Amino acid sequence: MAAMAVLSFAADPECKPNAPCYSAGTVVSAASGEPGALCPNALASIYGTGLAFIERAITPADIQGGMLPVLLPGAGVQVLVAGRYVPLYYVSPKQVNFLIPSDLRPGEWTLQLLREGTAGPPVRIRLRAASPGLFQMDPETAVSSHLDYSLVDETNPARPDEWIILWATGLGEVTPPAISGAIPMQAAKLQQIDSFRVFVDGAAVEGWRVGYAGLAPGWGGLYQVNVRLPAATRPKPEIRLAAGPELSPAGVHIWLNPQ
Image 1 (cartoon, rainbow, N blue to C red):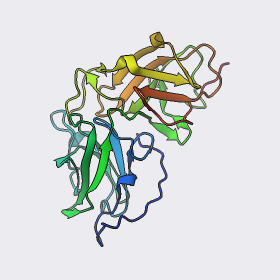
Image 2: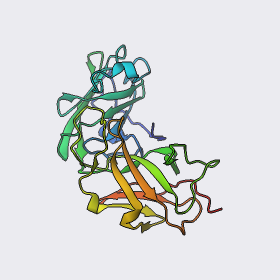
Image 3: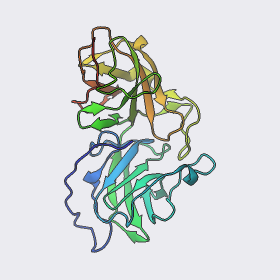
Image 4: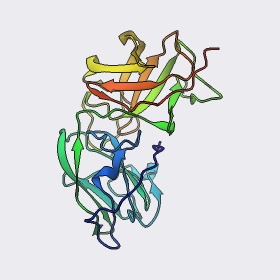
């Protein structure tokens, strides 16, 4: 899944000629595209210029022993966070998607991209304890599924009182803890589940309506939220997630038809 984001990019003054160029402000949530919405075990994107010479996405052959690759063969791109090579999902000349290590602590860390040994500028990024972001089909619509994993969209909308799955990143620590760089093979619930909320049109749903919130097995950095929509939900409601004081961006909706 990729965030539908359009970012303006201004050359960082530390960028060198013919080197990768980006800034701290163009390191964003891979789900929402929100600048600076970063935390441990979150999927993130770097936008810039000259980030790679080719386009390359991860394939099943790149995953060895259940561990995500820190280098996609043939791409020549690596990303360091806090001096560590981090797992990559996608590289291209203007965008690189990566996974922030799950065992980093909130605070300021240095990020740097290398393209075949040519370094981009080291930039400082700030990690929060959580930075909720819903993956989006477009700037206004969240990626969500029915319980059979079929996509919720205009032709197959959700219904009031139906259980659906929301797909997100940045929801925070889980139990058992995520293993940095490893693909989770089992469910792991949010550690701070008592402070997690799903908001539908600005109102928090009752706790019993959240059946599960935690890692999505089979995909590093991806979280799923199983929620039963309120019976009185209006057409195309706004959906937001709260992990403690952190809220996912406003203005994101799901397709829902009461009929």
